[in-house]
Length: 93
Image (cartoon, rainbow, N blue to C red):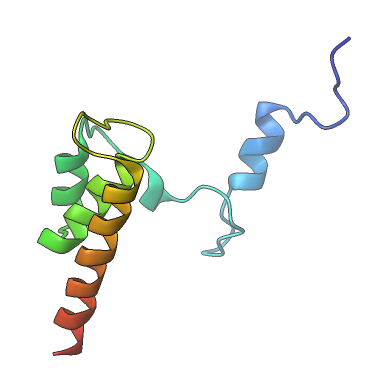
């Protein structure tokens, strides 16, 4: 028997995700939408990310998807830390 007590309909979820008068209630927002983008480079370019920001995004993406031989979870975390430190140094100048 299916437990329906904690399940929500699509309409209930969509209503929760609506943003009223510029207020974000924690649901989905336009800046999460990937309108016509097919890969990470599209996202990087659409958001005008610099080199460090793009590498942070790519490393984070590799946690669950796109991990290839020669890399590991720890290596990807180290890349994020490295590029985040570079970005922090850049904005402090």
